[in-house]
Length: 348
Image (tube, rainbow, N blue to C red; front, side):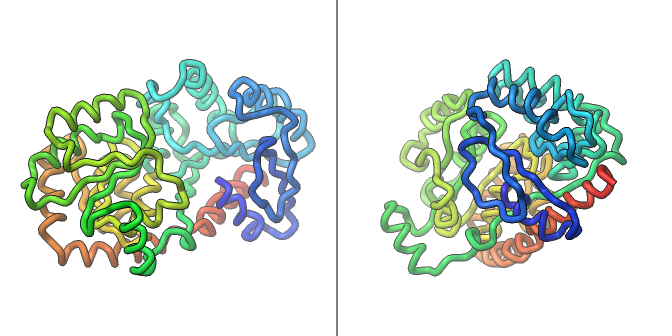
């Protein structure tokens, strides 16, 4: 969100003026904006809702338009609005949210989208979801694809990667997954497919990410499949370390069942790491033909893709270079131009 905000004033008409309404703890630099901070602690859900629904309508009443950047716009606002929706995971996987947050999004997201002048989706997959689930008219939806930070996510010097491997006791070859440990990430099937590979020839599998709902099923699968010596859990990975993890891995495996965009896949490709991923939701939009894409509900598909990735060094080299080239086509400048295009339609 912050990355695209930084680009919007650079690509918008020079006579446009922008104000950013941010939480009290927000610290990022936003050149080109008049910044207005909330006087209440918006990290608390009820206070955030109060700020969003009661204070924002008054604070924005004299403005020409409002961009609600996360699902919900103020219901009492009377100025034109554009709303960004990232995914409908709160519909498809409601268990990941508290009941109150789930109810809030389930009620107010469709209302916000129907009231808005324009709706921005971060992928064609999310746009299709908005049409099919909330009946948002397709011609009201604009797509502003996500991107990555090329200064952070890129191939790193071999010496830096070797030092990181040594500091973290990493083998020369390993496969990597990064994401919240929860059912929609499809880790139980990944582990089942991984267990079908020759134990003597498969690289270790490292799983990074915090525990989400029903994460116990994943750890039980490791025990049941006798993978304790082959699978390593490293917990939450700080964003500063992510490029080193991607660069160190031989393969990035991300067989998710549902993603609004699939940023980890794009980041891995930008680092030159070959990818095995799902053929569902937004992930084909990110990878194109660069990755090995599988039916994520088929253990056999996953097993065959992992087997090929393990054995085919020529594919890994080609996929690494192709991934770098494809990742370079995603940029926050493009996202900002697509967003400003929605402003032109919604506010003028």
